[in-house]
Amino acid sequence: MINTVDKTSFRRLFFALTLPDTLQQNMVQWRADNFPPQAGRPIAAANLHLTLAFLGEVSHAKAQVLQQQAGRISQPGFNVTLDDIGHWPGSGVVWLGCKNPPRGLLQLAQLLRSQAARSGCYQAPLPFHPHVTLFRGAIRPVAIPARTTNEIFPVNSFSLYESVFARGRTRYKIVQSWPLAAREEKEI
Ligand code: ATP
Ligand code: MG
Image (cartoon, rainbow, N blue to C red):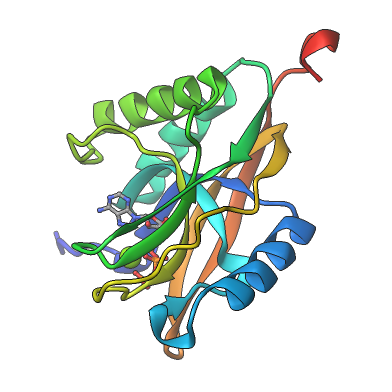
């Protein structure tokens, strides 16, 4: 028997929240107005996202299991407020985040990460710190603006993304999305 692994069936996958188009555009404008050009490598508007769980290189069969499990998640939507900002010089990342992440966001990420771990997708032992990466390659000191955009966006779904590197750039493609349940009226 020929024992070959079909490399093409492995994809680089992660679960993430999509940011609304207008928010992506606003963030890029705000970034241009508030950071010097040498701060780092700016992430393209369409690539701004909030990662929930990173899966790594995943086989088709394993992805199917993870997609089935994601489809069984039942929890209400929530709002995310991007009111925090920071710089991790070690990883060269400048980010926007939440001072007080909503419980729904933490629960969703926790569930996806534990399902991923049970399927054998390595999960770093670091606590989950929800963030949107603004710059990569920011390894020198960066003057961080005192205030963020303070944008609030509603989250009513989450998605599985494939990360594709081609012709010198990384693009993300949505593989599948799942709705979150309707919220109680008082929370909207
Ligand atoms: P590139 O690596 O090509 O510069 P990228 O980091 O945006 O671009 P990926 O490395 O495919 O693309 O990562 C996709 C998403 O998963 C990003 O949000 C990234 O921060 C996150 N990610 C990547 N590697 C890990 C990891 N080892 N642990 C946790 N999250 C990760
Ligand atoms: Mg990367």
